[in-house]
Amino acid sequence: MSAVHRFHVLEQQAGNILLSLGYEPMIVSDIVRTSRYIPYNLTARKELDDGTIDNVMVKLKISLRPLVSLSDAEEFCRDEMGRMKKFFLQLPSGLLASRFEVWISIPSRQFQQFEITRDGIREILCRGQNAGGDGGAV
Image (cartoon, rainbow, N blue to C red; front, side):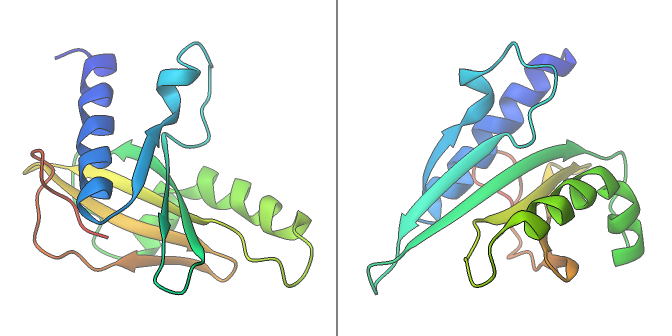
C-alpha cells in the first residue's frame, strides 16, 4: 500500500470513529490535497446537550511501535506541541479553543490518541477499539 493510500485509509477510519462518537467529521486534506503541510487532517464538531458545540481537530501520524510514556509522546509530537503552544499564546485569555488531538496509528491496527493542551500533552484512554474501520478511542 502506498503511503498516500495508507493515509487516506487512516483518514477514513478516523472519520468513522468520530461519526460513531456523534461528531460530524470533515477530512480537511480532501479539500487541500495539494498543500505541502496540513496542520491537521480532520476537523469535527458535535452539539452537546447544553447547546454548546464541541470542536476537535485531529492530526494523524504513524508510528512503528506504541508509545509507552508521555515522554515518548512529547518527543514524537514535538512539532505539533510547538505549533499549538504558539496558537495558545495568541488566543485572547478566556477564549475556549477547539481541542487538538494527535491520533497515532500503531501496529495491530489501533490508534493511540493524545490531546495537546495549554499544559502539555495527555493520553486519551483507549476503549479497546481498533483502527480497522470501527476503531480507535477518544
